[in-house]
Image (cartoon, rainbow, N blue to C red; front, side, top):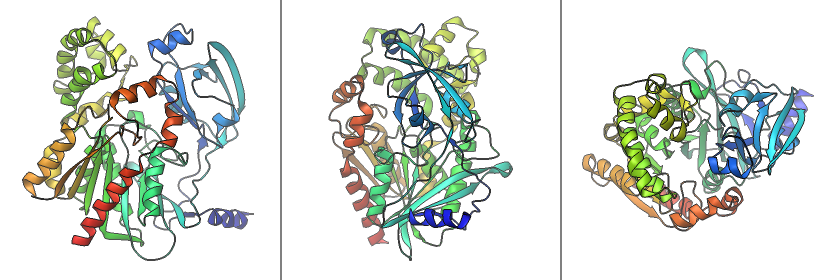
Length: 462
């Protein structure tokens, strides 16, 4: 039976790396639901008493969520009778599941309470088309922990130029993404053009073992994990070690040059980068981004009176959220705008993650990386706010290594690689309630062309 299973996996293009024993990490339970926070307006539309719960944004095939018949725009209120206060409660509770466990959810569906129950399903393996293969491996972490790694490559022997996809801020899994997920579309398109594409889960996500949950770690621990991942990547016999590229998406653009400082790569590509210290970025988010998303300008002015001293005390003076919340004005602001859970978490991460992130010397990391760098800004990227960050990255690189930094403007494209039009068009799509379906069919393949052409140019010149 075991041999038959291995044959089936091989036929599906799934292999286990010999570089990291697959016997250490076992397959996890798979809830398979993409969730986000519940806004005040959404709570009102669903006739909820408050903005607690987790909004279902997508349901992944062959998952527990699909077996339970969850639907986009459902609001998860309870998991096994435990109330969901914040959307991050869902992955936290799911972490304790084992395949075969009983699970019961209480939902709000179009304003009505619905209860569903069933059995927890195991996580399926990602598959590949006939001309490619997937390898599941492991990344050793501190204190004998492990994180899952996944590499997809063209079939065949020989050396392949390799791209390490480094994800952004959230504690979301990259394992077996839906085929139409734009991150997967980007990675699969690069594989189709002859690249091996490597990715890894953050510590505490997915099949990880022996580590704290992702939501409890600091940025330094996350950096160390990605550095270990880069080391593991270069151990594969099919990797062309002279042509390894890092693709840093969003916060991954901060991570990429830091891990490249001590483990050199051919080049770094950034998309959706802030390009500045986190305190400065937060100020821009609340000053410049909120009007884009419809916040009144006068309200922004008033809010900044609270935000500026608050983030200074938090980022610079290193006060904890508990200490800050002793000020009732701060507490209200933290809860309303920074997703404060009343304990140690802001924006879904442990507060130390944000404080450590602010302390990273961004410009020095680009100097130390000494890599060819392509910094891309998408015209409709609300999260990056504007092109300043991407231009600054290219300028910093060129100031130390003339000609190594390149800035590119990608028209009509949002933070998630989706061709939407303008920022106003993006807002209308998001407000329409069908953003996931739209994204699935509007991935901007011009991003792949841009990246592919740039990498091939750098490889030709080496």
